[in-house]
Length: 328
Image (cartoon, rainbow, N blue to C red):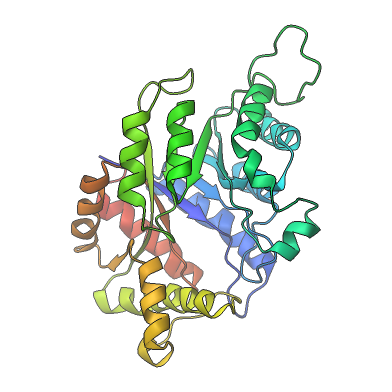
């Protein structure tokens, strides 16, 4: 059986505050821990009104401190925005506080716009150093070497599990070369999924961390008691992605009755392409929708996102998904 995990962006819904979003993130983590999900990951985004997980390491500490057994991590840290030393110290501290429970997924996109990149004091070329930054971070989190001058404390010898996140072939090749687990961001950029997974498995080289390829596939899943209710809830991510196409992001919107009146044919086409790896339905129908994705990709794990405006409906969606998929 494929493992299920949660990707959370600490969404700030219309009518709610960042405080609500962070409280909801912890509440959701507590529920999915009970429901049998394996991981709860938070993502780094900056300068976005509807996302409260910008200080990702702080959010991970908040969630890990309020849960007992579920793995908590970053999906991901956008490494070009940071020095590897700072991330090694942050995640080394988290691993010291919550031993055996912290994951560090890394992406090479800035996760923001050029103006914000400058505010982060990083240059537009910082992503070009991503492979070297990963190796530097890996060394700082690993056992100390003879004559090593720089030490991450806490950090060294915590050996926090590293993941490469990606939506292109670059990440697949890097993860394979370094022998790291690979998570594909098909929940918003599904186009290269099959090719990337194939390249990763074909080129994988075993490492101290990982003996065999390990693939995590991102997807959007919304489950409700009825098909109609699930379809209604799905209009929230549809609006969200249409706004991305318009370049007009905002707070997470509540669902609407008629999505066709919200978007133009072009917006529908572009948003639906980004949402191609998205599924909604009842507990009776959702497994039959997800099984072909699992079979086609050979996924070891599904990383599930659910941009649902109503927190109770969101919690319920993950609980129903766990029941439908037989999570333990």
